[in-house]
Image (cartoon, rainbow, N blue to C red):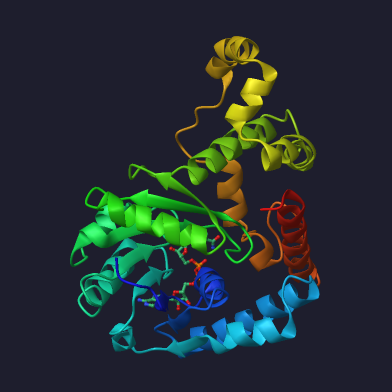
Length: 311
Ligand SMILES: NC(=O)c1ccc[n+]([C@@H]2O[C@H](COP(=O)([O-])OP(=O)(O)OC[C@H]3O[C@@H](n4cnc5c(N)ncnc54)[C@H](O)[C@@H]3O)[C@@H](O)[C@H]2O)c1
């Protein structure tokens, strides 16, 4: 395996900038690439904001933060990837854009450079069709915000060499992350399948007027979320007793929602322009700067939980 010193991060948006910091924090020489100068300017602001938040929370120091920032450079020139050792891509979630990017970059870097995409759910195999030497192409799915959330899903496409997926897994561990292996390229990989199964059921209960959105959130925040932060569902089943869980699943599975058409509530919110914190309103309202406060409070809580759990 090629020794990794220089990392090329494509996309200076929400995910790319945070991933760049995860690598820079471990001493890698990181180049962040974007096609838009404006996006690079935004990326630099995001970098400052993230680092300030880490210092305020005691997770970094002025000195360490300055080193992280010094380890990151920016470019709009794809040819800058020429002597890179590892590529991670977080450009917009559109198959044709990702394929165009990968078709070009996989012919610029050396043939032994590992190539990873942070797609949320596009097929790794479908993106890999554009890649020169697709056996080195691996899904590396981070979770927002990547410099705080430990999980990374490492996904094999149909043509991925398993040794390369394992190398990405080991690299993720060396970054202080908690990677998992997704051995087949299924839509949504593992975490988004679980997340959207939970959402489908809660949307069904809200739309059927069984619980309010607030109480649906409370079920997760004050009950299941606390358990799941400490134990996985299989560990919880062992604690509860497999016979009891078998009995419950025997009568409950048949009643769970099986909606194949998407959520009427989500459709209606999108039609009203209620897109969430970025629009100042979604399921809840975020007027007068409340969106920024909500994001700041979220990051503070995530950091505290990660700290308490010792991850
Ligand atoms: N936001 C999340 O919660 C999240 C979580 C996990 C994975 N992802 C995935 O990460 C990727 C990026 O998401 P994001 O939230 O950072 O989006 P974003 O819109 O914040 O950033 C995308 C960046 O890609 C740049 N870009 C667009 N076309 C490009 C190209 N051809 N070459 C280089 N740069 C280009 C844009 O200028 C922008 O800066 C997507 O694939 C997304 O599905 C997002």
